[in-house]
Image (cartoon, rainbow, N blue to C red):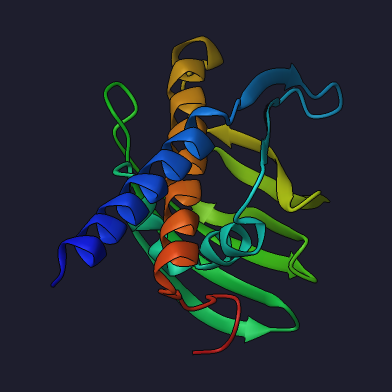
Length: 195
């Protein structure tokens, strides 16, 4: 390899690292909690805009069976019933830090023209696990709106910090994976389709 091509490869690698780091650092994930007056449940709402990798981010978030790779608190995510009428069921195993511990949730998941992912718990050890991930075009990127009721059976005052951390780390990990997908050409399967 000539010194010129070596320098070009180093510069390309450095540019990629700077782009990835700037992309991640610039993402402000706003998280708020609100109480639903009808159900009394607490809803977590998170919003962020990713200025690039929008299509790849959607693909990553539609790869439900890869969720265990996105966050260490998800120990398993597997398809339990194939997609019928745009709906699938997944079993998700969680291992949350103390005092929450291990939980599982079988969720029904539906997608809407790749613009949203909706889920609700069918059964499990969680008191509630339901929500929506919505994707809205924003220039060359995408705005992600995450809204969920996540109740592990403990008072909200004990679990809010865990919920915020989980959502922030999960969305950041999905963005990192989307960056890898876009820059390496690596593609992940879409779990919303029949396998």
